Length: 254
Image (cartoon, rainbow, N blue to C red; front, side):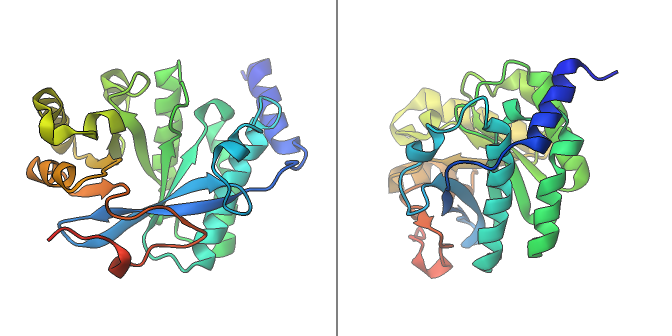
């Protein structure tokens, strides 16, 4: 039997008034340095004129969180389709805004159909900094998304809210290493050992690893030597407002 909280949550999502603010997206490429290809673009929320993310996120509250999460998905798919994006599209989502995964995903499926963007090229990743106290609930959400055909990713792996307990409950398609593990990894033996261990574990489980936040060639080369080929960061390309990054514009390693 559904709880009162579940019924109210779904109702708020379904009957929510339109958002009182507009927003858009910048897109940052996730690259495969081995294949020298753009693997995906992560959609990063921005103001309607390209203003920084906090100008939008500070307006998200408990009252409009559900509507915002749903609007984000549709907007990211709409813009990616308009840009003719051929790579995968990575969309952050708010786990705490979801009460019934199989119902809350309907508008996303409708947007994918409307704009002709293949479901199998959409990655759902947990939003950065979103504390999820119930790891099993997050695993249930991701499991439902994977069943439908979306790719799934755990962001900030190695930080407080995305650790081994979550991975034991659910094995996503992708793990994104926490940026703190990547920063200065070429000069830090403990970080190299931890990342090497995570990479080996993920290979055993059939999970791809993305290293994000790469800012130097030394970090890139160190990670490549550890067997990680999917990378994201300013060293390759900065986010582009309402644009997809062309492969020839990326700073590929020699």
